[in-house]
Each structure stands twice: as C-alpha cells, then as structure tokens.
Length: 83
Image (cartoon, rainbow, N blue to C red):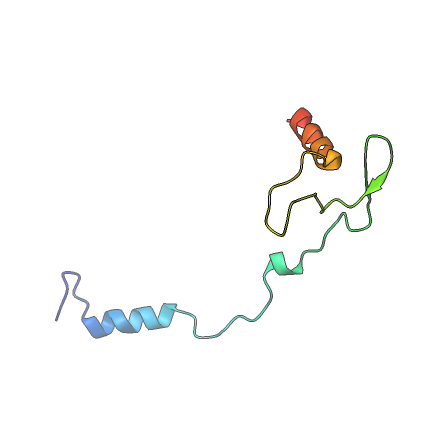
C-alpha cells in the first residue's frame, strides 16, 4: 500500500522505529533528587511556641478538623493575610 507522499507502510514503520529510543533511561527524575530546604527550621505560633507544622487536630483517621485547633486557624489566618 502506498500513501500520497510515496512512502510505503514498511517505510513508515522503519522511520518510526528509527526515531523511537530503544533504551531505558534509568536516571532518577529531578523531582526525586530534590530535598526539602526547610528541613531544619521550626514553626512557631505568634507567641513563639514551637509546633509541628504537619499536624492538625481531626476527629478519627479521616474526619473533619476541629475548631479548637488554634494552630491551624493561626496558619490559615497568616496565609489569608499574605494573599
């Protein structure tokens, strides 16, 4: 079978095989090599008390966050004021 350009199906197949890489690149992606810059810093409240930045008070494993979580409310307030 010939196409309008004059190339046959085997010619097109040979062309695509030639341009597709045949090796596996095993190098890690740049995202995998990245490290956290803020790993040594601590988060404090407005009053200077050190807190864990990743925790928030929730009910159960996948429950809602509690309104008593003043640290989370403070983080949200700072985020909202920075926008």
